[in-house]
Picture (cartoon, rainbow, N blue to C red):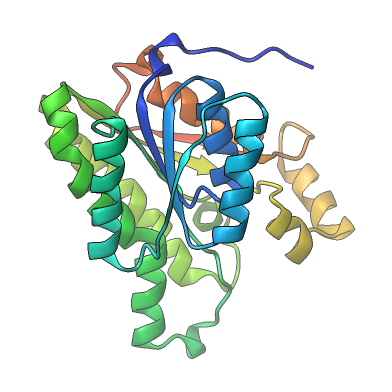
Length: 255
């Protein structure tokens, strides 16, 4: 097994991860906890989230602070972020990970569906940034990591609303990087490839799709949530202190 980096600058840092109860988010929470950060996360799945908290504690790390929250409810979400800041100190690392890639066809999309999918995949990230930016300014800066998706680059079918949100994430990241840079706040995006979360494995991984993926990637290995978590660690740490307004593609060379 390879040895991976330890980032001293992350020890004790107040970190918040959206959608941290499972999948990529859970890996991010675990990796920050292993670095000695003061980690909090929000998720709508209480059972999975509480199990993750106990698993991290059993591994000898400080228990993450879990907030049960529907990120579509912006007022409640911003209240949860304020409560985290009161408990852990101002949030100086924000990871906007939460999303849901429901499939849909053009003819089936209604205005209500559009609004709900944008709320799940884009809107909460903007208002989380709005909530934490004042605290980051007071403490001299921070790092915000947003999540895009390889799906709009490779044109995955029946996913256009999700893809619209994930393409917009890049624009949001770059625009706010300019606005918040004078206060020492960095914003970057991660574009994951096809990451083998349990949901992806259960719903879409087949021998045929795996063969096609390996043909498309330069590196002939499947990617897993820790591969993304390690990029988030670097972007949050002082090792990347002058990196902002960038998009980092972690896809095994698929694009």
